[in-house]
Image (tube, rainbow, N blue to C red; front, side, top):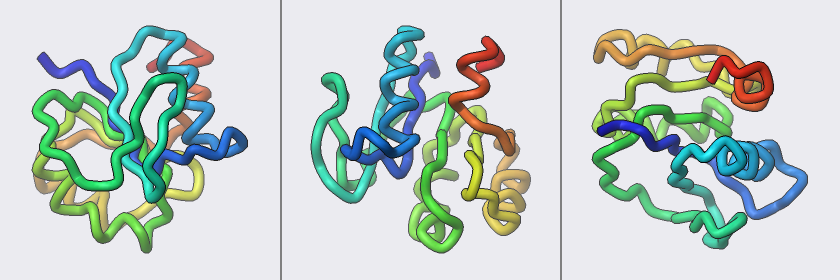
Length: 120
């Protein structure tokens, strides 16, 4: 069953949106996986630094600029999520084309706004 959100670009810095979104996802009782540059934890969620072979990712919420995303193209495709959310500043036409070619939906949106308006 696909029901986990992967926050890609997670940060232990409490001022970063990726950190805030992890806390909001937890408030909504949404299961979370997180990958970032620095290992750590946010409210009990472990931030991994390596690309783990998750089998149940429903949504990838991106917090990486397009240049940093290139390293993760194949990884994201192989996770086969239902959708990828491009948060502000992460929009990437090249990745969108790859997602479309692999029948993966994408949204250019803000995960925080989607959560606060019950559209997640």
